[in-house]
Image (cartoon, rainbow, N blue to C red; front, side):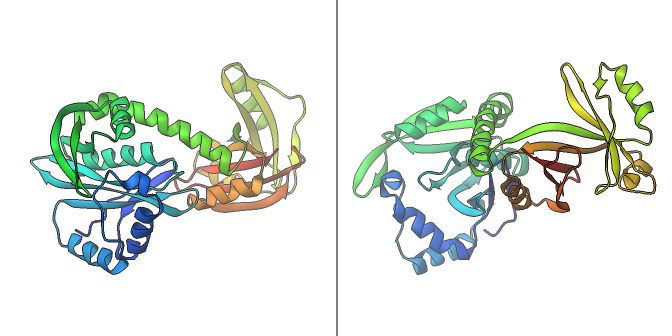
Length: 326
């Protein structure tokens, strides 16, 4: 069934399978036979896989996805929901390439599609009982075990019991989503360090017309400020940094005389100008943002305050992000 459902996560996303994915699916099954011995075998032939996909496109209640690594922008696995009946569906075809950390997030995104977009009330899976690692993963995520189905699978002439585990929409919202998201965030931080290096919050830029008046207002909130105001002719602004216990560092910013850097924000009454992050490799950090659909708003240039290179990106949600070289 050709569908348009997708889901975008921290490190991974799900998109509909296409006929062009046939070669990837075959290679995925061929490259790690140890990890695929507990799933139904498929003919390791691209034409046969294309024929299977064409038949799949004609079926109803079958949603087959490719798992993509957002940081590397390439496919790393497959996953699917199928046999939907009376707001209940089965999921499977879950194969992820060796070394990928997509397991938790791919399942998390699939559950989101099942309960938020397909409006199912239950999603279940059946796993070979000998595949202890997978059944343990589901249990640790909060899934309940309904039954052990005797001799349910026959794989390569060998019979296996199946463990049927399930999650309801209510249980996903109350328990499973919290457990999976916590795991997903940890993986994201690990992958971010691996791909980008240091990427730490530094400050929030605040647009204003009068730094002195703005400073007095923030003093009432517990902020104290540096003595001197800095100017940056390249950016057309002047500024001053402030800090407060338990609150984020801020940078008060105003236009230099005759400059209009902040004018579009001020005219719209938008005071929060940008979020800034200190990065160890500004080129890698910039490429990471671009891969996640951010657009360059101001290219690399030397900051008068930091005396290091900075640049600005606009995220898809229209948030302006500054990268500051460590």
